Image (cartoon, rainbow, N blue to C red):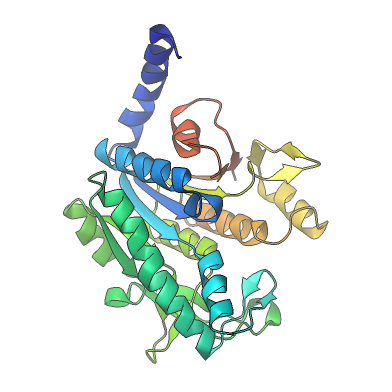
Length: 282
């Protein structure tokens, strides 16, 4: 049990952060174990609702790769990845829409609203929220995978005005009306940049950026580039880091990569001096 005096100190430590972040925008990339484990799902819903109740403008961009793969297997569709991103042909795009824009999105919304979070489920096709073009960076063909070229922030600001928490599936549409899959980490970074967010938070399945089994509490651009070039940082962490620096360059104040497997890790990172993950800095 935590002593009453310790509980009081925790609350007092959080007070200046609560004052600082009132009416500021946080973009949360929700994925990994936090979307699978039932207890972690519940604490995530509690955390984002608490942040909204104290005046933070919350936006959630969610993944759902495991659910997409599981349904694809049931349908007999092959799954392959290119440079850490899912190759999306037309058949796989239908699965992505069914999963991300359907069940996964609505399950998150329902759980948040059990705590009176005022969440609404959306995807980037809604009101042209994410306008995309085909992904071509690096020369790899990823099929129907898009890069965001415009975010409809006017629509999102309208939702904030009515005290709504958008929960967004990373799906977008091009100028010809063709739907594309979007890497959720990159979508969160683009959204945070467009909204000039105070914080962009990635929930991952590791404590943060790890080097030789040690957590980097802070990561700047030169160190990040060296780690990626050396192959020390690979796979799913690469798009997180790239989108983090893109968001910082576009005006996002801070980016955090934290362990979504730890209960209430988001609150610990935001409301304590020490934090629990990696802070990505200029």
